[in-house]
Amino acid sequence: MKVKAKDVRKDMNNISIRGKIVSIEEEKIVNTINGKAKIARAIIEDETGRVNLTLWNEQIEKIGIGKVIEIHRAYVVHYKGNLSLNVPRNGKIIQL
Image 1: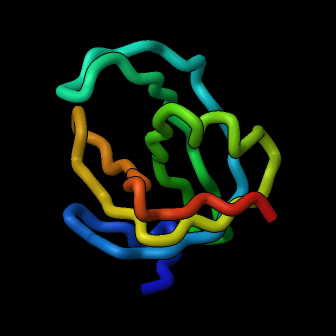
Image 2: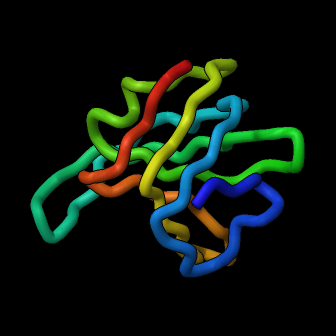
């Protein structure tokens, strides 16, 4: 299901969105149930608004500030009071 930033809601699954990366926080190392992992938070923007994007490991290198990307098979979580897109292993981030 293709969505715009303004339409992103908690617990959505299997969504696609296109937008421009407007910011990326510095990556950090976190402990997960699968061991250590790199994580970075970014913000993606389209003509309707902005939404947070959580990036893991190799996903971080796939994007850059100012780049337009398309995300497929993402899901939305509510974390620390904010909605955030997450891209699972079977999802895709494509830089356009």
